Length: 148
Image 1 (cartoon, rainbow, N blue to C red):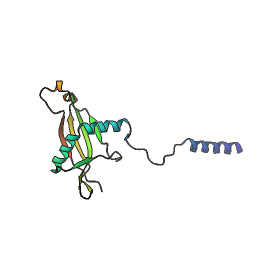
Image 2 (tube, one colour):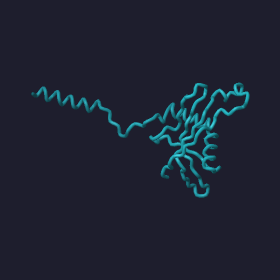
Image 3 (cartoon, rainbow, N blue to C red):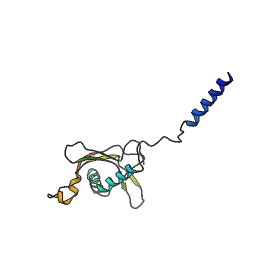
Image 4 (cartoon, rainbow, N blue to C red):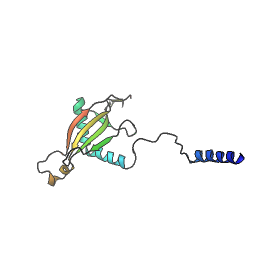
C-alpha cells in the first residue's frame, strides 16, 4: 500500500513538472520574425496604392493608415494565388485614421480590408513594355471602426 501511494505521488509530481505553464495565451499568428518582415515588405511595396484606395474610399486626402500586429482577429497581409496566370491576390487589413495637426488627436475610421491584384513580373521594366501597373486595386471592404 505504501509503494502504491509512493508511486502515485511521484506520478502526480512528474505530471506537474512536465506540463508547460503559460502566463498568457500564445499569439495566434507569427507577428515576429519572417511573417512580420514579409508583411512590412508588402506594406512598403504597396503603400502608395493602399493610401490612394483609402483616400478615395473616404474622399479625404489627409487620411493616413496604421496597422495593428497584435489584433488576433485578422492578419495584416494575406496572399493567395487563385489565378492561373502569374498574379497574386493580396489583402491588406489597415486602420485608416484622421490626424488633427493642432491637437494631435486621431480618429480611427474602420478596420478596413483592401484587395489588390499584384503581378510581380510587371515590376521589371524589361517585362512591362506597355507600362502597365504591377499593383491593381480590386476591392475595398469597410469594417466597423475600433474604439479609440
